[in-house]
Image 1 (cartoon, rainbow, N blue to C red):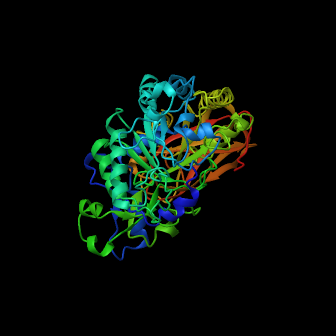
Image 2 (image 1 turned 180 degrees about the horizontal axis):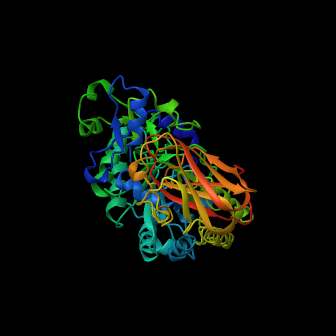
Image 3 (image 1 turned 90 degrees about the vertical axis):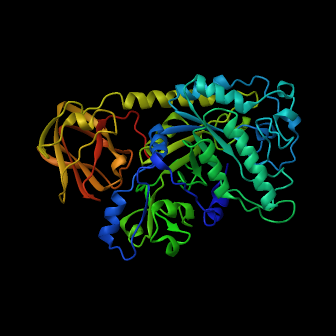
Length: 515
């Protein structure tokens, strides 16, 4: 995949096009009045919320990437487009095995690399001969996209497609109008022939074509087609719904804001128009989406518009994105995957983990073993919330403990307006814990800016953890604590917080973040 090099360049020039999305949107885009004060901008930011498709996507928490194609058989990461389709012949290919193992590992969606940079299509496209139809696999009668989409439905997985805009095989690449038509034709095939598509994933790879000219992608037409054919699909990375976190390490930011400033392509022209008209104008995404601070008060204080643009953290279970036999001993351990989960999902992001099948067409047993151990560890850690049925001793008397321990983000504690928000809980018994879970009801916005957790230890309050952003989910690890009383204080928030979940858990074995 390797989006790092190209995305930096492309994100500065690719316009983002948001249709007026009717009931799909909460309030995921706000134009700020010229001359708005910092207080007014912060208040506006507190009211920006995800669209329905963004909310559904965020709740998945973990999704799986599957990189598989000619590169698998050439032992390489990026093909040149000159590879022989005759090498593609996975003799034991079993997409049911992929879907089953991925589902049993706890993932909720599978995204298939339908075409990588080499231009080789995993389906028999009518617009090129560089496809599985030219391979010996199933005597040229196979359709891998069809097989995997059916396997996803069989194992209750959502289905997403990756279609590389960069095509090193297609002769029209670099002839921008001609290639854009070609790309739309292929995109139409994927969006109409394989049932529901829940995510379309674009990277920013771009280069010169055979004519020596750099291809100019018509992002607006790509987005419009997706909204027309698969209106519930999120468009990720080089798209308006989901942004890339900025690295392929698996680690998100400590301070991850889903609300970030956006500059309209023609701010003056649409400043007085309705949101619908503004959306038609399109957007230019910020040039630097890899800064450690994207949405703090300092970052938004001069914004002209704000948008809900959540983070996706992508990483491969192996050093490479495609399978290489030499990496069978270098699969990430379950401890490493656990650390990645805490540092991605636990930092207000979605985790996209790549699991590449081998040249036989199967997910390797080394990957399966790691995934199973990881999933078992997650189940063990989050099986029992020590805050369940706790007694609310002090603080806001309107708090019902069941509201923040019911395992849903649709109910929340919504205290009245004040400078500080705090509550004290007495647990059912003395407990050992070292993990704090917090969730905001993001349908009301992302608001919490700083919080701390204290425990009653040796007859006094001891701070055991503190953090800044929460968003959809925040997980903090800290040294073991034994106590029967805890106190959460939210001492900075953009308007009153809407706390949906509070949890205390114990993690074994102990691991620490090591990006």
